[in-house]
Length: 122
Image 1 (cartoon, rainbow, N blue to C red):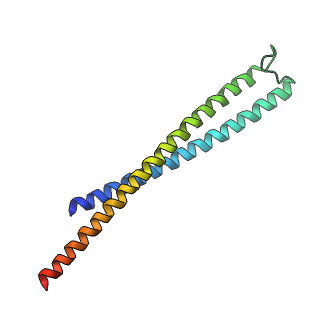
Image 2 (tube, rainbow, N blue to C red; image 1 turned 180 degrees about the vertical axis):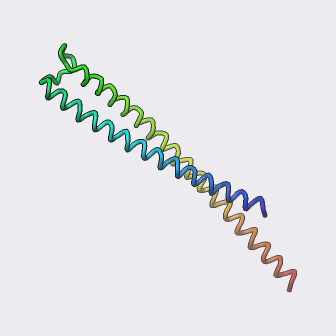
Image 3 (tube, rainbow, N blue to C red; image 1 turned 30 degrees about the horizontal axis):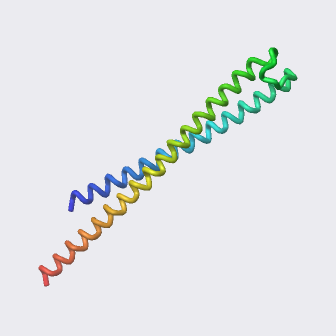
């Protein structure tokens, strides 16, 4: 029975760890979104200042080009983090299912032990 208790604790730890990971990924995705929005605003301000919005124009601001590139890289990273989050959510569902099974086994074993003790006493 001790091993079942350890299994339940292990599964609870794994569930909590997956939830923490998902929360971290959510925070990172939100931060990348905020940073990308800031870069969009900076690009728009730089384009307005220069009066040039055509990226292929020879006088297009270098800062705007660099900010666009950084924003695009952030969007790619954000998409990758979203995929990682989806995988973590899938993993969480699996571990949560395993936890429920382990808890059910522990409950069943505990019930069987208490029934056996009552039968021996009675």
